Structures are given as C-alpha cells and as structure tokens.
Image (cartoon, rainbow over all chains, first blue to last red; front, side, top):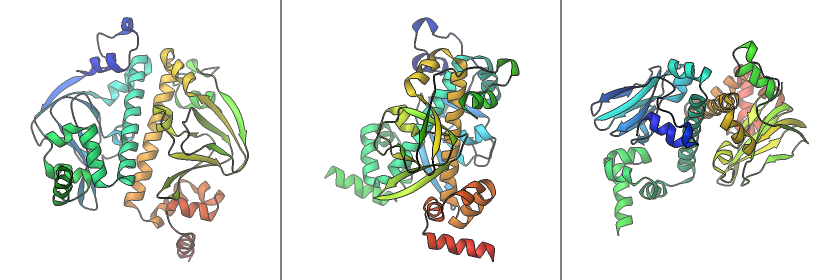
Length: 189
Length: 189
C-alpha cells in the first residue's frame, strides 16, 4: 500500500470519490539497516509512510535510550511535535532492517491544506491516530505490568514478538532482557 | 470568543473566507461550580469550548486522583480518546467555578467532516493542539522537577497560580501542598 492507497482505503468513503493522485507531492527513499531517518535534535520536516521493512523510534531520557515503538509497513512515522512546531526532535527513528518509505514535506502538506479537503481529512485522520497511539501507550505503561504489556503484544501485535530481537523488545517494555526471558519461560511453562 | 470566532481567528487565513456560521451546529450550556461535565467511565459524545469560568480535568490512577490540566476560556476540552473511539472516559472534567461552554456533538462534527473543508481544518487544528499539549505535559513531568514545573507555570500560565487554590495546584504538580508551600517560600526568599 502507498499513501494514495492509504487515503482511498481510510479517508475516502464514496467509491466515486477515490483519488488517482495524492493531494500533495510524495517521494520514495530506501534506507539500509541501522540508517537513521530522523536524528535527536533535528527539526522534522517530513512525515514517512513505511512501505517495506521495520523502523524503531526511541527517546533519550537521563542518558538512557527508551524504545517508544516499532513501526511496520502501512503505518506513518514522524517526530510530530517537531514537525508541527519546528522544535528539535526528542525522538529518533532508525531502520531496524533495510526499508523503503514514501514521504512528503511539511511545506507541501501545508500548501495542500489550504485548498484540498482530502489533504485536511488525511491530516486530521493521521493526527487522530498519533493521538490515540500516544494515549494508549502511556496508559499501558502507567497501569500495566511488563508481563501484561508483553501478553498484550502477543495478542495484538504478534509481529513485534516474532520479528524484533529480544533485547529490543525488553527495551520497549522497559525491563532487562533477563526479566523478559523469565516472563517468557513463565508463560511457556 | 465563541467557536465561530475561534475558527475565523485560527483557521481561516483569507479575510474574504471568514465564516458567518459554524460548519456544524453548536449549543450553549451553563454549569455550576463543582458540576461534572464529563464523568469517569462515560462515553464522550461532545467537545466543549470554554466561554467563561475555569474547568479542571483529572484522571484516576491506583485510587488516586491526579489533576491533568486546568482549562481557561477560549480553549477546548474533551475526553478525546473516548470521543474518537467511543471507549469509557478515563478523564473527568469538573467546573471549578460557575462556567459557560459552547459545545457540539460528535455526530454533527462527523457529518460536517464529509463535506466541509473548514470543519476538517478545524478538526485537524484542534487535534494537533491536543497532541502538542499532551506531549508537552508528559515531557515536563518526565524531565522537570516540581519546582521547575511550578516556575514554568509562573512564567507561561500565571493565571493558574493566581486563580487556582493551592491544594489543586499541588495535585497538578503531583506533590503535597506542604511541599508546594516550601517551594513558594524558597522562591520568595
């Protein structure tokens, strides 16, 4: 799926309104495993739609790296506060595998916002999804144990358990890899 | 300011495009001090624009009430995840003083989203603001001490220090009222 198809699937309700071209210019780019897409402190000018591969987004707190999320194809990733406010990014995005993304620039999106209803519906929808994801992750980590979050991953996002190295999953859960091993052994037995 | 004026000020760029009526129906309602606008567990069907008074939004965690924010006139308040997903609200909104709000219903907004560009620009803008507010508050509480957050309130939102009772400000900062008194004495001396 590309961005045009994403819009036709999630935004456009009437088959007759389906779009042939995106309401703003988009570009494609390939990244190698371990390439940085957005760096800590950088101003984010682009939003990325993952076509292929896996990305990781992380944040640095008190000198420690915390993984915020793993991104799989057909999802958007953007250091969105930096994108909206032109402030230095607190988030870093890295390719966990070789990746291909489709991306667009902030200025092109803002230009489209002036005249295109579809662009505004798209921007609203993606912002809503970012908001929901953020609240959900925050609530999970405030109210659930690492074991409960792990079980939830198993049920809701098994691709994380299947495709992400254990030490990365542990960093996402905010626990040591040994603690994660104990949780896994306990669940298997 | 009412919602129509909010849209003309923040959304519409060209003077000739200013709107005379809101792209969705809105209603007004008055609340008495201590009235609950949105209750824990309720499904949020409305979004509120505060015309007059002060509101408080809070969350319950581990049996303890935490104040998330104080809302002053010309800002929107909504238990937005509940509004978007029709899930029980984790947030409660209460009137701290007698208040007047302008509000609208989710179904009317969604209807307007189908045909009105202004409604989509408005929805996108308010969602962006909710996102930014959420990230900013989270970052403040993860990276700043209670004293630093208090100093920031003094500088950026003095109306909170001036108009909100000390015990409420302490609950917002996540500290005991006595600790807040110590911070205040230290800053004065």
